[in-house]
Length: 202
Image (cartoon, rainbow, N blue to C red):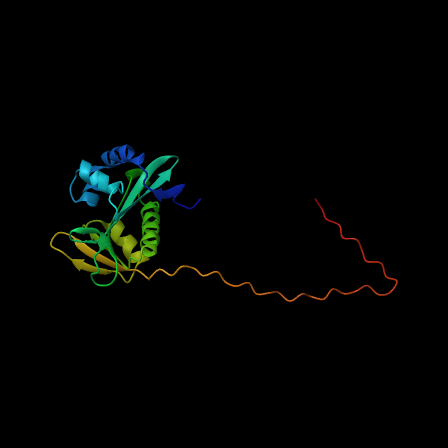
């Protein structure tokens, strides 16, 4: 178990939707404000999106002792009128991400673990750039971004920070061919010499 003590990071499943509604409602006003830019809980439409019901959305959760303690999503940018076609702006594949962690689990590495999982899954889809809108006062997320992605570009919008994180293009691992190991010649016992027995302690 790592230091976050999160037992599992997995995709959202249909049974999570009602649980996610309770998860977001239980967040403190500050946490909801930092995630949604207002002290609100997601509407039914946004909840559907955060449950990964749209084809261009990847939604995952962090689970500890069977309870959801964090949520993250990546919404791949799509061409207008064509939800199945990612927009090709500034390179192939960009996705907008958002992360939130239950108040009792903040500052324990859960958000970073969710981000790493989102990044790996995005790279496997061919995404080469992450985008995040972050409030200037969200020091936790800013520290995580700078600590993990020092080459991130941070721009200033009127009310938020516009963060762009370039991703290395995904390369599937190729199995390495096994190199045959040379056999070491075994010394032959001299004529008349008895080979000793090998004993194994159990």
